[in-house]
Length: 269
Image 1 (cartoon, rainbow, N blue to C red):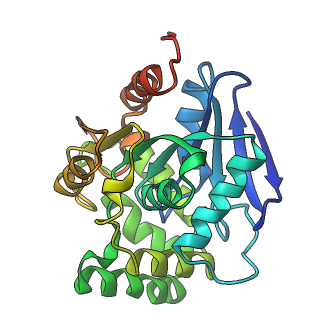
Image 2: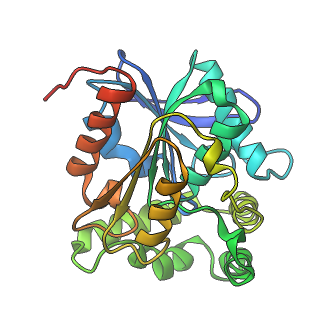
């Protein structure tokens, strides 16, 4: 695996693995970073060129020079795909899935297919959800990253998750989130309702959701899959909101199966 910072505007830090096959771009959740895709970088690199970013203002990526809305985050992902020679098959976890959908509608020529994991149409689907999302910025400012992560990260996993995974997810969040980047991300979620955009996505789309996801939930993923012409819905057994971390082998198998259809990638053990 390699790691480097690239300079499409704005600059982003990227972890990469694999030197053959289609480009697979992984976009992390609102409380995470490229570290959350370690199992995908390792497990999918034999069949794809896997790239996982730290979104602008997250992890090892520099803070953006100007505040970003959802279009700004999607444009940053588009610039990264162009820098890699695109198009890309895009894996978006939670907030990363929201970015991926906007990327697909805003830059359709750059997105070959989608994998949306435990995602959402955005917090703008209700006033209550939007207010709760905006409140997180103040919570992070008051608590600091470590305390903030300690409060939030354990809820992202199923009740059966081992203690080591809870510690790892908490550590990833604590090392990833900071202001102003998290505040931009929270506002991008609060201001967004993708309901009307989903029907415009005609590329193959695999929608995965952990059966124990209490953050975005199975019903939300079902709505997303049902609204896309080529949407396929799968429930991930034994997983919470972080299905790609809690059940990485099964998650990777589903992505490989998706790539077999969407990118004609041969099956490989």
